[in-house]
Amino acid sequence: MAVAQQTQTGNAWGVELPKQAFIGGRYVDARDGKQLPCVFPGTGKTIGQVAACDSADVDVAVRSARKSFDSGAWSRMAPQDRRKVLIKLSELILSHRDELATLETLNVGKPFLNAKNGDIPSAASCIGWFGEAIDKIYGEVGPTPADLTAVITREPLGVVAAIVPWNYPLSMAAWKLGPALAAGNSVVLKPAEQSPYTALRIAALAMEAGLPEGVLNVVSGYGETAGQALGRHMDVDCVTFTGSTEVGKLFMRYAGESNAKRVSLELGGKSPQVVLADSDIDAAAQGVAAGIFANAGQVCNAGSRLIVDRAVKDELLDRIVKYAKGLRIGDPFHADTKLGPLVSQEQHARVLSYIEHGKQHGAKVVTGGGRVAALGEGFFVEPTVFDGVTNDMKIAQEEIFGPVLSTITFKDFDEALAIANDTIYGLAAGVWTNDIRKAQRAAKAIRAGVVWVNCFDRGNMSVPFGGFKQSGHGRDKSLHAIDKYTDWKAVWYAS
Ligand code: NAP
Ligand code: MG
Image (cartoon, rainbow, N blue to C red; front, side):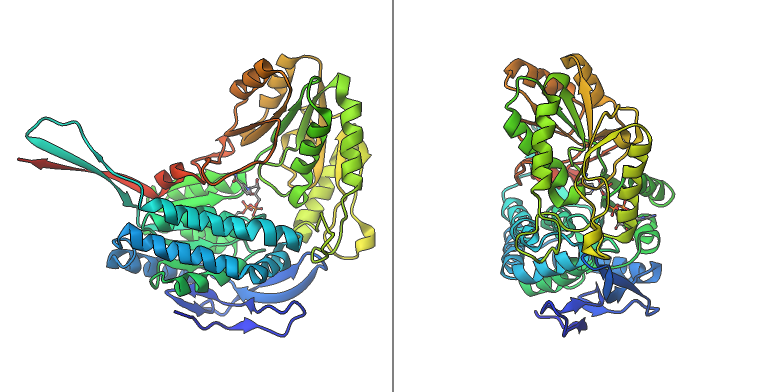
C-alpha cells in the first residue's frame, strides 16, 4: 500500500525531504504543529523541518502500536508470512538506495558513497536477515514426567520503543526493527533529532512491503520530550536504546519510575587498540587509523585509545599520520571525499573543546588539531592524533565521538592489558600481535563485548554486537538479539 505524505520538493539534491511523523499508518503533523529544523552539516544551513512530536503524539503512537499488536494482524501472523514482508522491505530499502543515502548524507554529513555502499545495504541486509531467521526458530518441550507436557514458546513482548542515535541512523534503526518486528512486536521508533529523514521514509516502504497499519510508527522529535515520553509510557513493554551512556541511564530511571519496562542499552565506548611490538605494523597502522577516522570518529566502537609498545610507537604513528593526511575532507557528496563534517554545530564545538583540553593538559598534537577553516561554515574537524597521553587524562577517559586518537605507550604486556581495562566502558577492543599466546591472553583479559585480533570493526549479521560495563547490556545482531524482544512462556498440559 502506498502512503501519501507531505514532503518538501524542489531542492538541489533531487529527493523529497520528509516533513511529517508516521503514526497509525499515516503521515501526520505533530498535534500542536511544532517542527524541528534539519541542518545539512556540510554547509551548516537549515534545509527543512520535520514534525517535533511530544508526549501527546507519543501517546497516540503507542496506542496505535498497542491496537495493532492486540489485533494479531502482525503479532499472530504466521512467521513465514512475516518473513515475506520483511524480505520485501529489505528489497525496497535496496531499490531506494540512492534516495535513502542522499537523505542520510543530508541529515548527518557522512560521505554519500559510504551511506550508499555501507549504511543503506547494511540496513537492508539486517531486515532481510531477521526476516529469513524468524521461521527457523523453534520453541522447546520440557523433559517433564510422563503425565505432563510442558511447551515452552517465545512470545513477542508487545509495544517496543526504539530510540536511536544519529551516527548510523538507518542501520541503528534496522538493528532494532529487524528482530523486534520479526518476533511479532509493534514498534514506535524515535530517530535522533539530527537524523529523522530515513526513519520517516522507511515507514512508507514498510507499508508498501505489507506491514499492517500501526505496527511501525515513527515519532520524530526531541529526546527530552518524545524520548522521555516513550521511556515513561505505562503501555510500552520494552525500550531498546542506542546512544550515550548518560541518556541510557536515564532510560533505566524512566523504567523504574513507570512500569518497570524492559530496557536494553547499546551505549558509548572508549575502545582500546593494543599494538604489540611483534605485530605487522603496516596492518596495525591501517586498522588503527581506519578505526578512528571512519565516519569522522562518530562510531560507538571507534578505537579512540591507541595503547602501543614504546619500541614501535614512532614507526606506527608515522604511518597513521600519513593515512590521516591522505584523507580527503570536504563535501560529503563529492565522490573522493573520505571524511565528511561532524553531525552538528554542538558536536563540532564539543570535539574541538576536547582537542583544546588535550593540548592544555600536556598531550602533544602530532597531526590535525583544529577545525578546517577552508571549508566555510560546515562542521569539519581535522583528523587529529595526540601523542604523550596518559590514561588518566580526560581525552583518554571520555568519549569524544570525533576523529581524535589518543596515544598511550606501555613497557610490558601486562601493563598494556591493565591500561586497556582502565575505563568505565567495555564495548570493543583491537589487539595487534603475531604471537598467538598473547592474542589469546589479551582476548580473554579485555573486558569488552567485542575483541578484534589483527583486524578492527569487522562485522556480520550472524555475530552479536554490544557492550560490557557502562557500554550497556543486551545484544544487537545475530539470533541473540531475538532475546531482547521476546519472553518465554511455559504451558503445562496434564493428561
Ligand atoms: P544521545 O544523545 O544519547 O541520543 C540518543 C537518543 O536518545 C536520541 O534519539 C536522543 O534524542 C535521545 N535522547 C537524548 N536525551 C534524551 C532524554 N533526556 N530522554 C530520552 N531520550 C533522550 O546520543 P547521540 O549523541 O545521539 O549518539 C551518540 C552516542 O551513541 C555515543 O555515545 C555513541 O557511543 C552511542 N552509540 C552507541 C552504539 C552502540 O551500539 N553501542 C552505536 C552508535 C552510537 P535527541 O536526538 O533529540 O537528543
Ligand atoms: Mg542528542
